[in-house]
Amino acid sequence: MKQPLSYCLFDTPLGWCGIAWRESVDSSIPPAVISFQLPEVTPEITEQRIARDCGAHPADPPPTIAEVIRKVCKHLNGDPQDFQNVVLDLGKTGDFARQVYAAARAIPAGQTRTYGEIARALNRPNAARAVGQALGKNPITLIIPCHRVLAAGGKSGGFSAHGGLATKAKMLAIEGVTIGC
Image 1: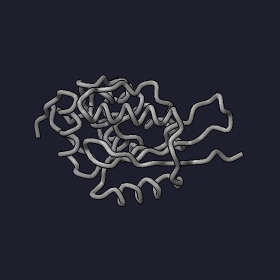
Image 2: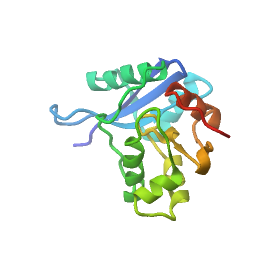
Image 3: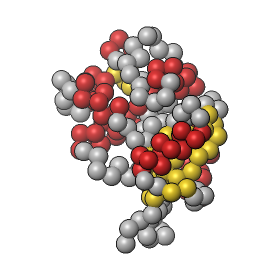
Image 4: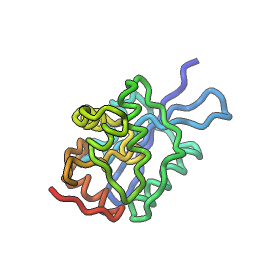
């Protein structure tokens, strides 16, 4: 039986975000987040992007997802939250990317790592660029906190969400981190 995919939009201090999830056919298993969309220029563009990227349909969030939304809103309002217990479904993501995402999820709010530090932690010391590429494809931003990963020397590096490095800097500032350019 195919598990339904759903999404909803919600307003945050940064703008309208989107979250998509996969329902479980077993009611004892919570839904798993499959995508998180930071705000685009308009809520309509945010909705178009999340619907297109995950093929989900709009729905009211079940209680588990509503709790994630509540935590996201608190986080983006300056009260950093821990998203370690959020159940994720990374679909067909490759093994290396999953390792990178796990390493990024382990970075506490208010701290950062570099692409090189992540690569070394994965015993792939020459894979800093590959780490950056994996993070650039992160389907669950904020919950997989790719904004906490910087370039060498504490420089900002890249950020593929709307607003680019300015959005990354805002997200880090919410957590009490100031970065160089």
